[in-house]
Image 1 (cartoon, rainbow, N blue to C red):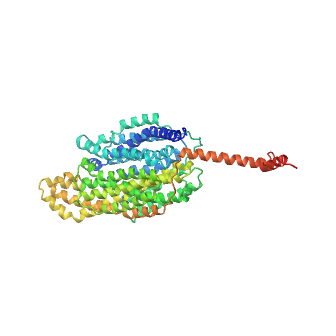
Image 2 (image 1 turned 90 degrees about the vertical axis):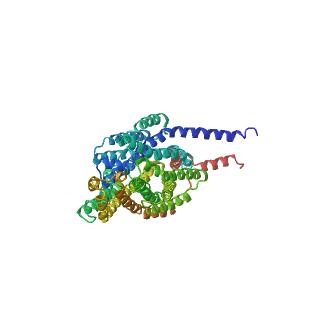
Image 3 (image 1 turned 135 degrees about the vertical axis):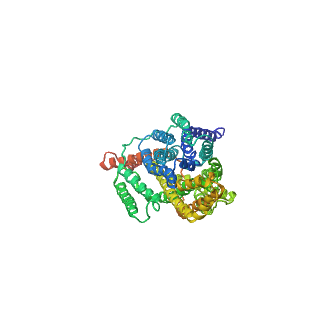
Length: 568
């Protein structure tokens, strides 16, 4: 009787040791994620000022965002495939180096084109961090236990997403916006050192590497042509024009060839067989619209705060906190509930409903909408993203084959990034078109306001006629109010684009199979699969030997033994 209490004590001690090992492995990973998020968010509130100083227009503003999202989307499945073939720890360290060096180089930009180019390289590293962090988490934490550690990820997300814009706004207002691109360098060095010392991943069997180069080229071509067309159509050329035919036709041709190559490749970049998995297919559909809600609204909310409400970059960072608070609280609370009870689908459904509500309500805002209401709308949208974003990756990892965990995880992340990229492009194009039309419709009012300024009106007129994004906060009161109203209406119209896609996301979530979450990590599932394979191989070997007569059948031996030992 004295030994019985030792059983739970031993189990608890082993659980505590496992918890410490996971925390140790997560230290470097969390710091690496913090670096990538900080480098991205620190410039978010400063972009209107940056693009204005570099002489860029609304199309340049959109492409500064889209360039990063585009290369992130394209590189994500590539990194995911590499994660199934090579050392994952080395890959994520390479991704950090690429990301931070490109970010620092962007700080030396002298024109919008250079900034866009460095932001594109930055996206390559961001794709690696997005894909590999999910894969490595699956290596060390089971889907069921993931929620237990969501508080840590939530804390990192909160510090980076809230502190980044505030820090970036403060640097822009007090020093110079270029320093926003250099601030992540010391954190990156610390992340690399910490990751080298603390991230110890289970050994994986060596495989012969086969890279699907044709797939990479075709995927890049299809996505790039589509996004260039969406961004420039209606401004540089008509929606129905020779350029449209060439770009859309080229994108469709590249997409068809990509499917053919993937079906014939021995090691496809995106194994199309995964779409036979209902969970993966529906999660991909849901992720596309979530990417639009997450990237599109966050980008243009900052622009709304500065161009429709006259906020400084620092103030814009503070004003977007409600959305981050909704995302943070929802991800931590729901993660804990998933771990405790094992149920995930009800939370995803509620998250889908909140996405629809938040997207629609944000499409109704004006320049003078009560900020309490705007904060509520942002909170609802953030909570919807927090409930759905990570859980969609979680349930895909739960059902994917252990040998395909990299491409499965990166597949969902890829389509989420692709959705965000297309969303930002479409919303940016809609914003630019709407703002242009509204300015044209109010030309007389704007001209009268400029003339009323007297001598100051000439400088204002020159700024407005340059085609660059105006610094609304510095415009005289008579003109500023007009442009705040114009940009508020244009941004609200662009938010409306996310609503029907959020509805599609909810429908996909409703039809997701409600599979229970496993308590095994990817490494444990691989070991279990190898053990099962060894058992099957042994059984098949015995059957073969028995068939050739080299080993007597067990049932026959047992019969002879029974006969020998039985009385005659």
